[in-house]
Amino acid sequence: MSEPLILGIESSCDETGVGIVRGTELLANEVASSVDEHVRFGGVVPEIASRAHLEAIRPTVARAVRQANIDLTELDAIAVTAGPGLMGALVVGLSAAKALAYALDKPLYGVNHLIGHVGVDMVEHGALPKPSMALLVSGGHTNILRVGDIASDVEEIGTTIDDAAGEAYDKVARLLGLPYPGGPVIDQLAAEGDPTAIAFPRGLTARHDLDKHRFDFSFSGLKTAVARWVELRHRDGKDIPLADVAASFQEAVADVLTAKAIDACAAYGIDSLLLGGGVAANSRLRSLLAVRCEVAGITLRRPRPGLCTDNGAMIAVVGAELVKADVPPSSLDISADSGMPVSQISM
Ligand code: KG4
Ligand code: ZN
Image (cartoon, rainbow, N blue to C red; front, side):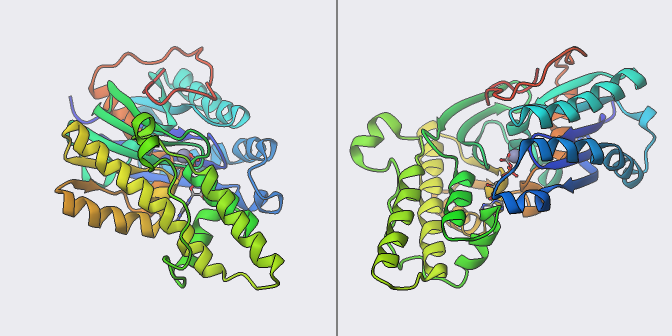
């Protein structure tokens, strides 16, 4: 069989994404974001996100089809994010995907959003080495995963016991008075700061934590430490060196993420590491991981920043892998699962 032609829809949060791939070849990746509508609330408002998806979904599908220069009837399947994410947002994309699958009489694949983040690098660098370790860092999730096969075998090795890495960025940005989403803003600010200025804590790295939580993360103590540091400066009437705080916070996050991911590779004897999720766009995480992987003899797969944040191509390419692996399609009556577990690749 020639490589499958797949349209993928993503609507789990504030981006309406539609991607089209032929196998791992990227033909279109159109994204409509409602982020500007959420800024004044300091975070994503689910009802606003759902309404924005509803308005954007049809034009975004049309743009992707035009960009890929295909006809919908040529598609081999429709893939869509089935979870995890905001329920009201997920159902918009899922309903659109079901309508397309039904009208075109094509198979439907309900795909796990997180597996999309892990697999998106395929559209840039081709098939994944088997097995790979994956470091998944998004707004809602932080995981280390053993990926035996992206279509059939993903195992959770570690997770966060409180906040996700992206959530920590967003919360720290908020307490520094910076806009939402915090990740890109802190990333930029940090470029002018000194990462060694303030010694912020590295969660779950003390010896007694490693026994139980060797591959797990904790970012809520770090967030509290930043808040406390800022509060004390205020109390003493000193101004806040924003760039130094941003750089020191970012260093603490990148240090723990990279150290634990590399330790997991060593512990499982895996020499390929995949980076994915919105926080994978972070410049310091990318550079520190590259250096540490090189030292450890690990091949790093790092999608370009534009593919790290939510998009439809990541869902389409996982859909293509499912088709190639002969995984049975989803039923047309599947429901979105806002808490879909990361080891469940499709529905
Ligand atoms: O994967 P994603 O687009 O959405 C979820 O599935 O959650 O991730 C969004 C998260 C936000 O928390 C955002 O602040 C963070 O990714 N992010 C970044 C950067 N760009 C986006 N964090 C750090 N540095 C960045 N450059
Ligand atoms: Zn995401």
